[in-house]
Image (cartoon, rainbow, N blue to C red; front, side):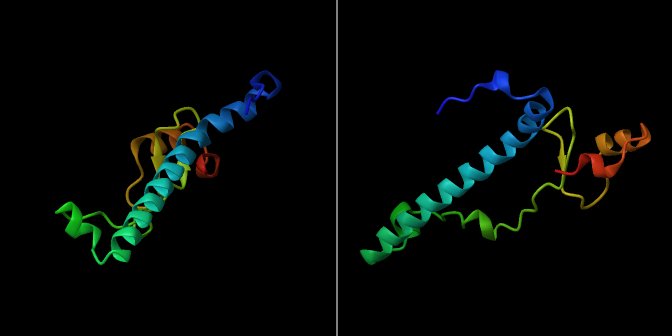
Length: 107
């Protein structure tokens, strides 16, 4: 699949730039969990637990990890994210101090 990026307006490109890292991470986690579940099923079909075969504890699926998805992201630096829980990060407070609104940071 080829996408002609020259046809996409700059604001949409910037929006994509912010969303792409989170989407890549979400898909990687999903794919790893699917593979892990397939391996568990193969082991189970042969009468084993995957932990027994590997000799160590295997991580649970990410869905049960309890990790909270980020709710806010810095508009110029996609690596700065915040779930909205706990104390505001310095970058959020700096944004608010510069007359920005919290709604502008929503993902």
